[in-house]
Image 1 (cartoon, rainbow, N blue to C red):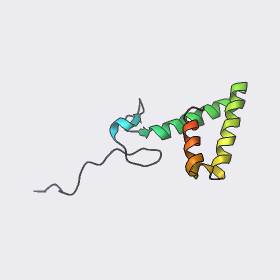
Image 2 (cartoon, rainbow, N blue to C red):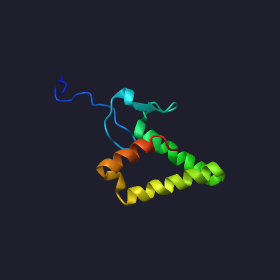
Image 3 (cartoon, one colour):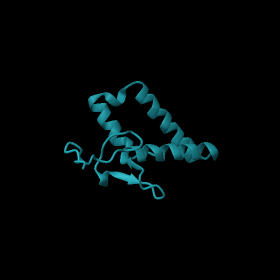
Image 4 (cartoon, one colour):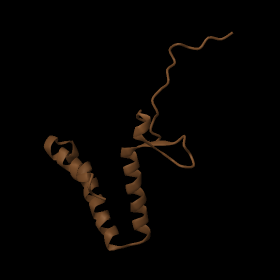
Length: 99
């Protein structure tokens, strides 16, 4: 006879991208693979990566603008501007509305 371990508890679901724990309603599940859950932040990141790769395949004015925005975003992160108290909050708020 075996006894269930009392210390084992159901853990919160984990994002497959960043590895952080989230509530189930804070994850996006993949259609063909419901075992895969990605948090909203990582889903936004993956979407940007997918659009960036698509822009590299087909050049357009919108793609060039998105590439320029991505370049500025990378520069800001490289210089740690996103960590400044006031500037960081403004940049994060602006980032939600950028492609």
